[in-house]
Image (cartoon, rainbow, N blue to C red; front, top):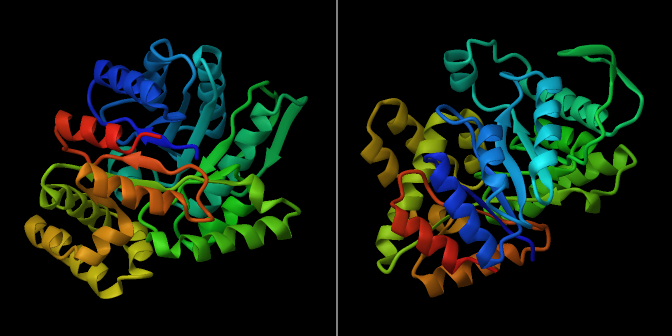
Length: 323
């Protein structure tokens, strides 16, 4: 079973050190997120010469702050220094990030995700010159780049999942409850078949929020904080969680919007922790992670240690859940 790790937020030296540990533990890929404060491509370039065989991926970069051409060029350049593969994870992000940080209109996010993925594929397949006339972006008469860059989409709702089925190489679900993954992927698969694509060619790489501690309550508290943040700060995440926990998701979001972070974390139930994360002692967490990884739909589970976890928790979690 292939598996990856999202590198924890921090400075580049930390990312390099964690990536080396992940490679030594047998992970297949290191991914890095991007919101504010660290550029994903710069960070991965710094990691590239510290590892020898592990794939490097973005999980995720948004489709509004860079043009599809810029994303394609950045990923193609990264392939020149990465020792193994590069995986480009893209997503629509949230209205808060796009409008309040980047100063862009959060306009038609699903359509932009679809067209960005499709255009990046055209730009990186190394075939002639690229012309593309889309609804959110159009380009004309520029040469394609010759780079092997599979595009993964962070797609939660059904419309975004349909876009994944039409144009993406991989799917990055986050906050889709694990018991719901198979039925959620069926939307991807149906659309792929309608587009004359083989659903088996689409890599399913779910985020698995994970925390390992000698005290299982401490580990579960870390997952509650992670879930409360995402459900409270992004409507797409709230809707994804609400497919299985509608009342709980609403209570979390309401508390978060009201500024009561403690109440939001307290509203995350034990059932939610088990359906949306992996938490416990090393032995218990390994067992739970194995159950998620063994789901028929899962190809590449990605360990995500919650933001704010200390160095010891990061190290324990990565070691405990290693292949």
